[in-house]
Amino acid sequence: MRTFEYKAPETIDEAVSLLKEAGGSARPLAGGTDLVVQMKERATRFPYPATIVSLDRVSELRGVDFSETDGLRIGAGATMTDVATHPAVRERYAALAEGAGVVGSLQTMNMATIGGNVCNAAPSADTVPPLLVYDAKAVIVGPNGRRTLPIAEFFRGPGETALESDELLAELRLPVPATGTGAAYQRNTPRKQMDIAVVGVAVALTLSGDAIEHARVALGAVAPTPLRAMSAEAALQGQPASEETFAKAAEAAAQDSTPITDIRASADYRRHLVKVMTARLLAEAANRAKGTA
Ligand SMILES: Cc1cc2nc3c(=O)[nH]c(=O)nc-3n(C[C@H](O)[C@H](O)[C@H](O)COP(=O)(O)OP(=O)(O)OC[C@H]3O[C@@H](n4cnc5c(N)ncnc54)[C@H](O)[C@@H]3O)c2cc1C
Image (cartoon, rainbow, N blue to C red; front, top):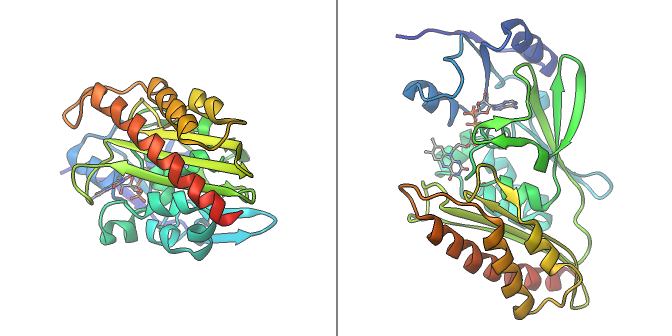
């Protein structure tokens, strides 16, 4: 049986000191729905951790708060249930509520944290495309203090992030969406729940009248990291919010993706899904945008 030391700090600073002391042989533990499974399967990309630094008692990492001036702050330790059921998230950040709301079962959602979803860096992570379309920023704490990184720069590859081994993701910050913004997230899975996205698509549109003032399209499970579909966004910018525009952007999103063929789907099928889902979600986001304008 493999053994490890278990530490349960109460502050972020204490947790960071423990990670630093361990010199790369420790892992932070949040809900454990990825890490414990990986440790059991010994499939973790890192050497089996000598020390587990539990974040469970670190109250600074919790909470979801919204203000009209500062936008949304989500503690890395907020659970999927905290995020998906928060009234401001549901009202202002619908795509994120939709992403957090499909993670596993209700039991999984009560354990799994948004920080764990982001830091595990799976290409299929359901909260990441929504975070990308809302231009979220990651607030990272390490031995030298705090730094902030756009979420688009956080991912380096499957399971690889911009975090050093002695750094923690402390919170996510999302600006207030402009008036006239509508957004949506959907994933394709063979089963409705308890499955991993074959493709995930999030979109956000800000409309001025019928013209698209601002557009974001983000894709999951079709590249080594979740990504923004930049040519799809360019195809939307300044255009009328019409079926024709959405079809062109959907085609561009499919071109922006670089999927692989694996046990769950072929690359061609994934590209096809990106196209179909992007067109549908853009129409949905436009309808939602009109509802908020
Ligand atoms: C049954 C089941 C169903 C699932 N379904 C889905 C699904 O539908 N969609 C989906 O996206 N995922 C799914 N997952 C995966 C998992 O639940 C999520 O990725 C979850 O959000 C991970 O969060 P956690 O708190 O459990 O993270 P943990 O397992 O505790 O940690 C995950 C990784 O992040 C690191 N970490 C955690 N918090 C921090 C932090 N604050 N700073 C730095 N590093 C940190 C850990 O060291 C570890 O490497 C499922 C898992 C299970 C077991």
